[in-house]
Length: 300
Image 1 (cartoon, rainbow, N blue to C red):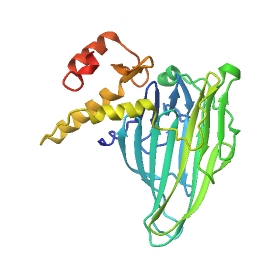
Image 2 (cartoon, rainbow, N blue to C red):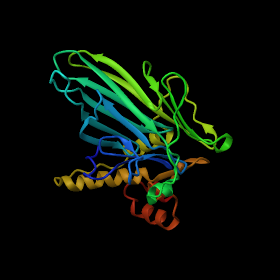
Image 3 (cartoon, one colour):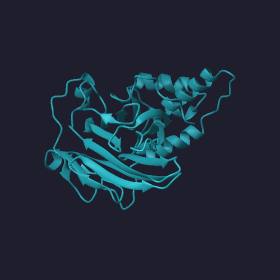
């Protein structure tokens, strides 16, 4: 069940285990802006501090966004009008947090004529520690982007086992220039085209290496969470706010579940998401007790 958009003025938070992503309501990550906490955080580091989208040279105007589940969201915007005065394409950005971060960007031409579209995604990283970002005291600057393979950008700091950062990959046909991924296409009338950008973390010198065609999203814990949410009792009410509150509570409870690799079938409830996600015994016991009607196994 998709949940209503986050209230205006707040950020969109995605959580997957101990990793999390904070973005603006339009989907952009701009952690290099003064006072911003945006970014992709993995292993207590901000491995991606900037990921901004431009279509035809401009930032799409945000229209709406929806949290599909705790680890994925959909952002909808509209690109600026073309030079001929026609409305720009509709921009739908599907974001998923899993082993890495993946953005699937759909561009939809609702007009009666074909339209040219240029897409640019600017990426950057500073590898700042999460506590420093949270406190608003970031004392490191962005790293210099390095070329990877075709359509790739490498953002890395350190050497050997202290190497940390990410590799940004993209769909076929995307050209990487510095920290910018550029792609262009012609969309036929009343049709759509799509492009994907994936971020693969590098932590303690170890890099998540994707196999051919593997998406960055949908980790095993995300699939477990989806299965758990399908088993949550549904609540019907003539009071919309009550139904929304129950659905949001179930989503939050599911997002706070963590799993021991030695006992993958047994979940416990953590707290402190997203900045200080950890297991707190008293809180876990009380939450499990109060959630007996939803999932008795949390108390076992």
